Length: 267
Image (cartoon, rainbow, N blue to C red; front, top):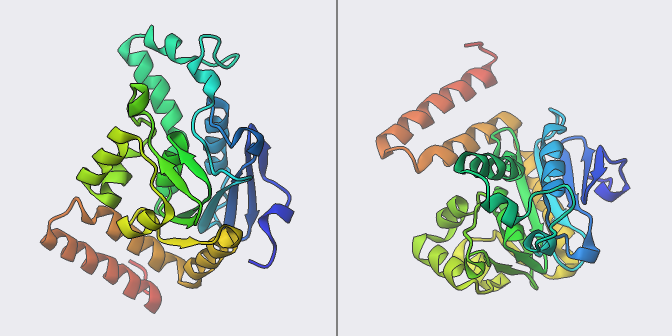
């Protein structure tokens, strides 16, 4: 943790995404502050590549955005008839058949899925605007630390669309159905105080302290033995889909594996 991620040689630095690795900690940074880290298919492909390039030594991944905004959502060019050169715009997508639309969106979603892998814990450090795709990218992570100026908003519904970048499942899990529906259907802003109170964020700090707070959380996560964290994360992720008795059984099985591992007894 002694070496700031921005001082490390990047493993990946392209299309608005930079990946650096410092032993067990990886940092993914959105690097287009001039456009408030607006998202595009090229950025999503770079995020997918970052996930594939993570060394096996990495246990915690920190996600951050340069500048005043974490990510203000989709690049506005995607809404125009001209679109982004070489990329399908919304009109192009609308003219494709269901299978093609499904395949295209599924490809985009891959940028948002790997953050919840059982072998890592992901922490989003979120400041300023996190709108639409930006909100959903923050929701893709396991944990969120927010600056006191954070403004979450899900604006897709206001534009006649739906949130389709994997954000609906974690949002309902964090804040409940009724509040998730209200946030999405109204497109209103959710500030730092509400984020913490509703369970959307784990911690809110002054903006100047955001990176330090995220690094402190990463250090705390790294202090526990890796296999214990992996087993615990898997238990918690699956708890909602199990009955009480099924979860008790899963706990017993996981603990048996941990006891044998600590005792040096192979299965």
